[in-house]
Image (cartoon, rainbow, N blue to C red):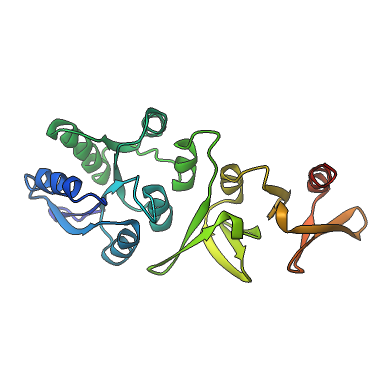
Length: 255
């Protein structure tokens, strides 16, 4: 990632000034690291990473407005990330299993050095890197009973937050999903299967290989052609329903 002999560009993201100060002081002992930005929230992080393109990111998870997982989903994975977290043991186990660098608050200089060395080895191409896609990692670190309550989407350096209650349906488009909400569609780089696993199954249903629908929006199901159906939403949109999707949808509507 970085040119031979050049400095590694790093960004710190944490809503606590004290946490940023600790990382800043630990990094001051490493002249090979250039701290190019400090961010106090996720929105600043997305903007800074998009514009500055650092190679190393120290990322807090529990932040207001936009958490660390949402930031990671929006910026992609073309950099090394060290999570800085006070998360519980469930999430830490997910990080360990999926080979993600992390620092559990509070941490000392020895633990910091170990994480930094691992990240630097990754940047130098000396270590295998088996990180999961950001959306899958977020799902792995979430307790099974916890579902998404919002989805963050990036458009350039701007970030949009879509509350789950306002999501009408999801449409698969290659490696992206189109999120339909309030008459607009927002593209997000994520597979429909990974998003499906993060949504509450009592509220959202996969009615077709390419569509997930908010069940509250479905007003009726109509025949379309031989052995096929469409779901008609409250805003008039019609979505294709597969044979298996029709069986699941009927089971829900008949309850």
